[in-house]
Length: 216
Image (cartoon, rainbow, N blue to C red; front, side, top):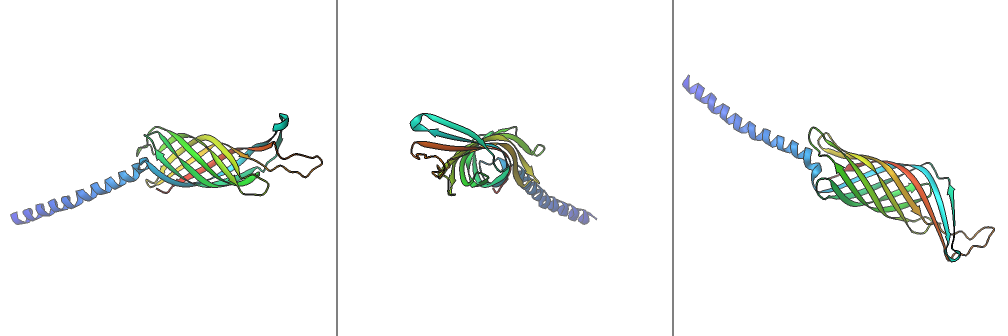
């Protein structure tokens, strides 16, 4: 009987030694999966649906110190896709770059922008989400006929970063974006227009709803 009890004790001790490290390792992996959203370097891809709010045209005759502005209708919907990378400075601020493809009623372009985000609160297992504000600005490169190659974009908004299922990190965001395009001056019309000394800019105002999914 004594030998049986000793054997059972040895078996139980061996089982605990085998079980406890595995449990701790599993717990550590689970906690890493939860908090890895806080590591400093991140890469993501995403897309957005754009709803046009309006478009303004501005023509400046530099030689005559004269400026003409007028509104113009624009297709209601457009969109964009992008790939981005962030670097985290502290626990509440990130800065990075985005590049992608924009398709809107006033032209198609390749945007390249700097993006800054300010986060509020801290991600924990019980609160796996954070609110943030973002701002972006940068050039856009147009490749269609009838447009000069370089324009610009600027935008700002609010978002929510989520950790879904302890492994999927994503962001939902909405905001305002302005796209500036520089159309070529048309010389075909009822009036003679001198192309030199004339600046033509077109501003599209957009409400944007997007999502980002983090690759790592």
